[in-house]
Length: 230
Image (cartoon, rainbow, N blue to C red; front, side, top):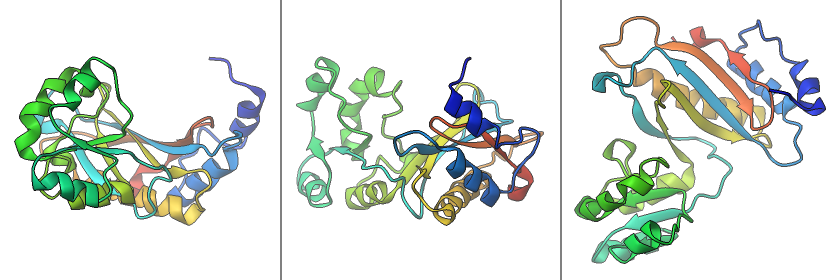
């Protein structure tokens, strides 16, 4: 893959043979984020898990202390008094059955997170083929299937992010924006890493955290010393 001049200049500042301390890593990511927009800072963790085994699946959520720097649109599936509760808590969209054709047939996906009360999961289940591949399906482990819609919405708006293994057993998640201070990025990185270390499957044999890399959207990857979290 060919990279542009800006990327190549930025990449020269990163020693690929070095595993940086978390604070040094985020400082380097900020330094090498040279795009004209406010890049997202991303964390990529290659794990030793095998997601094909249910007991080695990793999925959960954590509220980042300084948020993600992104305005998140929340859709809530609810009925009865929970509709008013969701609206009062600041949900961007609230509804039920009437939203099914809009999402299924019209391709409406103008939201980032979906929350549902347990009694609405029968309705939401019909959207599995649309929401599932996009990682938008509500899940109790992520706190998005709940009767406490106020807490769910508040957490999401405050910077709650979900983490899970992809097909290659890698976890990808945002930890903020390049415009954040080094301390804010380091705090967010620590919060997500603490949660992931705690989520280690008890049945796992061998290395859990094989590699940890942070990068900005357009910048080079910076390797983080995994021993700091073990």
